[in-house]
Length: 119
Image 1 (cartoon, rainbow, N blue to C red):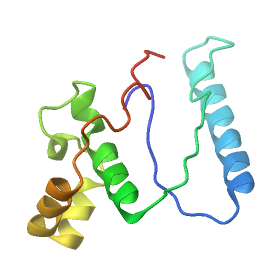
Image 2 (tube, rainbow, N blue to C red; image 1 turned 180 degrees about the horizontal axis):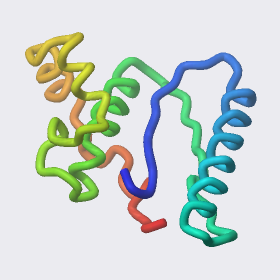
Image 3 (cartoon, one colour; image 1 turned 90 degrees about the vertical axis):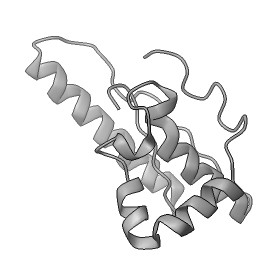
Image 4 (cartoon, rainbow, N blue to C red; image 1 turned 60 degrees about the vertical axis):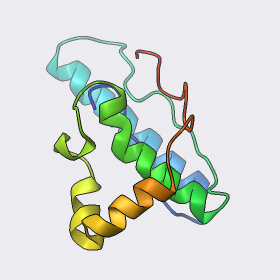
């Protein structure tokens, strides 16, 4: 999305992953600032990690990530967001399986307020 992204990553080396993300974010900010001939703007200045506490938590998180473009009003349906992993999930798991995951692991209030602020 224009101002943030979500990624569900499994790692045993969280500190190393966060360091790599910090470098990526810094380089991306620097490059965009150079392209737009501006200085000091920070992009992707925050990273939050959450431990998946159960399989249900994991699937609700997958649903949250796929639904995020709808939540922010960029698309009417999550399948319409062209940069979503949802397309790969549908192809790999099939529509029936993904529909069952959506039904069995609804968002309800999950993630409320996480990324509501404009950056």
